Amino acid sequence: MNTSLHYADVLKQLKEYESRNEERPVIRWSFLSNVTLDMLFPYVKLLCFEAGLRPQIAVGGYDTALQDASNGKSGLYAAPPDVCVVALRLESLAPALFRGFGGLSPQQRQEETSRVLQYVVSVVEAIRRHSAAPILVHGFESPLYPALGILDFQSLDGAANTVRALNLELIKTLKRFRDAYVVDVESVRARVGQKEFFDARYWHIGRAPYAPHALEEFAAEYMKFVRACRGRVRKCLVLDCDNTLWGGVAGEDGPGGVLIGKTFPGSAYHEFQEAVRELARRGVLLALCSRNNPQDVQEVFAAHADMPLRWDDFVSRRINWNDKVSNLREIAKELNIGLDSLVFMDDSEFEVAMVNKFLPEVAAVRLPEEATSYRGLLESCGLFDSLEFTDEDRRRNEMYAAEQKRQTVRSGA
Image (cartoon, rainbow, N blue to C red):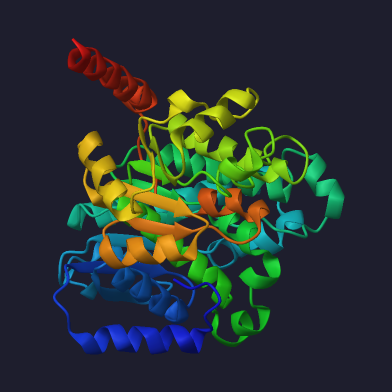
């Protein structure tokens, strides 16, 4: 989704998708909430359409989450849901914890947090009696300005830390249920900022607390879970070299002339490589696809021993003057994965456009003009997010590299 779109533009794009009446797999959503979420649904629908899915949304009543979840004949279950979202805001669920914390005794605070946790568990249990769909449960916002001000943050028993402890307990408790996950509301708020997260006016008018930017971020967060639950996680990151892994052009600037290091401007590329390395540690395969002379690229790696990424970190390399569409096909074939497992990142608008046109299965991402934004773009894309991490994931790049060596030995024998 284009994050610069206004709400009216989202509605316009959504109307265009709906008018096409294309054949798409249906994804059914059920929402349970104690706030008004009407403006959220267009964002969810648009992201579904962009992912090749046709959304259908069922919504429970206002602040009747437990009743609706318990009623097997409610509209939430009229058609078996594929995703259930439980969006309960603490200010509505436990006003005393959110606004009247100072008036509660330690025992009353404990009783309130226990009550909140038990209510959420009861909702999840009720859903599980009627559906096996993944359940996405909103965590709770901690107060930004607690009654005791900065003193509150110095106490483990203060309002802010009480809510943080409640969120941790929620994570632990949901481990009892299959496919029940916490949506980290605090992270959403941190990413968009409080001014773009909470809309006080609409909260008072219609109990609709979230501003458009927050709603867009929530929708994107949900889709990360959808991709992970449906096995649509990307497996391989394919990178250009010049002005992507480093600044400048290896063949023109020479191995020592490219920008890469711990001081600006090379630090932006260094940080980007660090983020790529973290993905590799999570089991994401790395590949190179660059219009270059192979020797020039290898010399850059050799000349910069402090670069986070090394030549051997890449399990597939296509460094030549062929078109990148053909090279990406070869990378997928060599690694024995589908084109829909690839994410291709390049600074060139032309190259990304060609991949989008001829290989729509590949997630082609154009890097922004400012290299300082590279890392943030990679870390926020969510294309590699998974809900499990195994020893095999940790060792995947190592295993692919070992297999390549075996094949090289066999072919040379």
